[in-house]
Length: 356
Ligand code: ATP
Ligand code: MG
Image 1 (cartoon, rainbow, N blue to C red):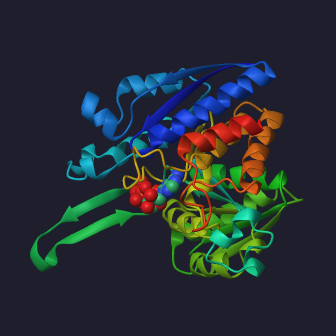
Image 2: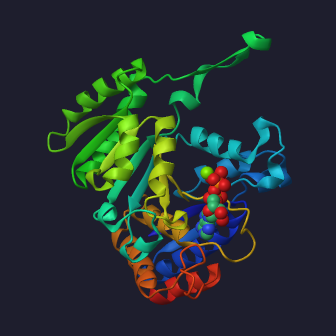
């Protein structure tokens, strides 16, 4: 199989973990006889430094000419004082909009050998294996009007939560599609007791459900979902929700496994050009020190192999290698207990390649 992969390392540890993903993908290409062509583009702070903007046109062009996009992470203290319109994070919002990445998918699965890293009890973590599908290009983060008016104590600020039926339907459909290939349960999270947009969301979910008779649908208020996620997370299979709700719930869920450095994500478009990135940020506190855990990035690459290229066997091989290396007690600093040996980013990648 011949594929072009756009790599956008971004800032901080993004650059280090991307190198690792590239090495792992090269091994897969060699073993399975594929041809992966890697292209590389600037995004975030490094793009601001070199091109003056967080998402240069040439980066977008590079993505549009690729079969899939891998992203590292953006941001860092160096750019914190930039005007809001020119911060690294703007690059992220812009690429989501430009590529039409409307669905953010975060699998949350507890690794048995890392249970001691989680702040939660074994009994809570047992069987945790769910996916959060977050709407990414609409809702409260993009609704107009948004801004300020007036002054003094009469100054007011407004944000708007607006969705079209079409936007809601496509994200809920994505969740049902995903549930069909899993344990066949969708939990639609909203605030329908207060918000009109949530009532339309709920109605739309019921409509979509008719197309998937084999999939169970439950509705849950977002406040309850926040509680259930830490009290009884094993009850979930696929959670689907609005942009802001999903932002909050997915960060909450990432704490379950106790390891930010292990969580991959994908952002899906309707036209088939998807983006994959680790859940963690650029980790400026450890950037450049060869300490970052590259496994979230490596698992994001595995998601790409499966979702974008349909390479199930190759994706499973990468995931098994990660499992194998962890089971053998290999740990980067974020995962290691006090008495355990700590591997560098590069050593961890070498272990994965060895296992493959
Ligand atoms: P962002 O705003 O981009 O989400 P953040 O500050 O919320 O960034 P991270 O950059 O992900 O979060 O860092 C949070 C903490 O987790 C930091 O202490 C960082 O060192 C650690 N961390 C994040 N990712 C990794 C990783 N892959 N390996 C090791 N430690 C990590
Ligand atoms: Mg964060």
